[in-house]
Length: 523
Image 1 (cartoon, rainbow, N blue to C red):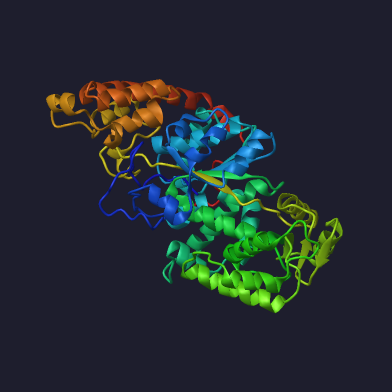
Image 2: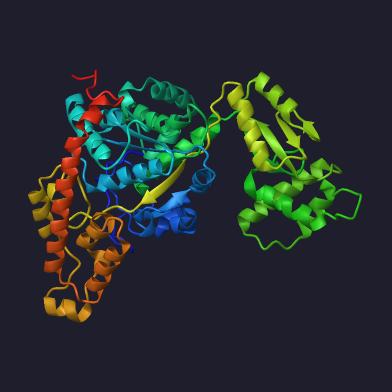
């Protein structure tokens, strides 16, 4: 969840194959690279951002240029944005070095969501930096101020948003303790590869990050988006799991009094009902009839599908002549006795009450989910909405390969002297050919060029026409690398000069903000 950006390189507008890349293992603290972003859709269920781009009001240029390439459950955030309902955006920054242009992407995403009316939160992951990277509190304090100054200089409004550091936020620490009750060591092993050598503080910092992600909902449940690089997706998935585990009630579609094992079995019940239901008949569909239909139906399923069918048929036969009817089911997960009784009373219309669930025959699933959350919050529960996320591509380092805070030549710090930024761009690797003649004949390779990325991610700013012109001129051989780098270097120097002037201007705003800049944990 934290934006460290010391890991992965990839190009804008395409994919890059990197030796040693591991497209299957996403490590929030590691150095593996993503060789093909499309693999993330298949392996981890990340959806393509282009599928929702048309619903985004005044999309940020990072969205328009497919630098933000994926999302998880972002539609619920867009719906809140469209309907002028509460929503939030949060990201954390692990202060392990100077803030650099890779971090600026995340700063911009938080600021954009704030401008759309969201409750924006930026946090300093100092507990994680201390536990996972062994930074001293004095080092953390120094970097904390630098990160926050850049955030404010880029447009974050501290009076409308929230700033905090993990080590001094008691609400987050209390929530982390409660979430820790729902987590176990086997999950830390399977998700993060922790073992007997992993220190407890590192594991504690993970639970704290889960609390960070859910903390915008402590006042009220609301859709919340976490902008991250894909390496942080394990944190997002774990937070979504923990959010579900804390809920008092689950809400699902159902067809009979018995429980089914997942969506596959539920879908089979739906198919049987749709096949047998007759709106003109008074006689209901019976479970035994549905069992016979499913047993004989040609569903063209694989082995897993056959196993699900066998399980459903067995449950239907056991239910006998019980009617098969669509319904919405409220499952008692963690509800207090008082909350469960209140839910029963609140469900209007035809219903059936069982020991561990309530079935409603007249509510739709959306209304049922709203009611379940309302009852939960009224009776002391959190009512968390599963957090959403958007994913941006990593920037390639200026020297090729990864952009790393520990390799100064690979990145441009937001604190670099403008002349130093100019020199770094001039020395950067390009996607050009071996000679000017070959470049003119064959064209350049902007998809493999760290300098073109500077235009797309930063230097072209909101000017899509300029970014596209640079791309096309390079690809057609009209733009040579020397001139291109000169222009980029000049624009970079101008950006750094302007940014640092703004940093100086917002120092008083930062000092007045509600965040402790010096940790009481210094040692």
